[in-house]
Length: 207
Image 1 (cartoon, rainbow, N blue to C red):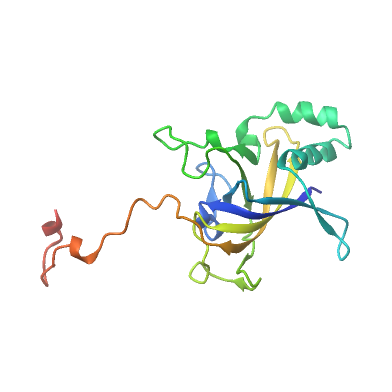
Image 2: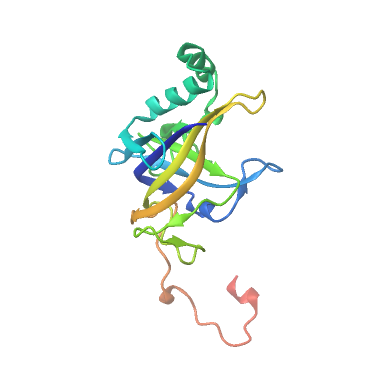
């Protein structure tokens, strides 16, 4: 069980994780996933009811987290809150973007001032176009880091010692609209910025 969320208009970061499973630590379990930045224009919705009669209702990330840990503690919100507040940032799927820094200690582009969700799955969740059709390879997908997406996640509490935390399972991602590229490393070099390489030139000539 968990809290089923739909976030419309989230900004995706580390989008290559939708197609390439990675481990958080060396030797760890490889999972598909990405960061989803919840900006001012994003809409968070929570699913209520069961199919086919479920509804989507507005919800904040704080409300969703409270519902998830309260559910895990069988409705005891006070006990759940004590458990949740003792977790460190790495044990929470919903994180403070101001703490997402690069190796130089600077806040990563696009994260400042917002919360973001780290959502993962051992199995590759579907990636869909705006028309809801599914794509099967990264070559078919328009989604790159910095784009806006609609994402489905399940927020759940895991209580086992050594693995405890409030995590997010990635259920699917849909392209919404293009955004400014994140982590692009600068403008692309034009052809006039390279020298002509004669046939048979040695690689050392590039030195």
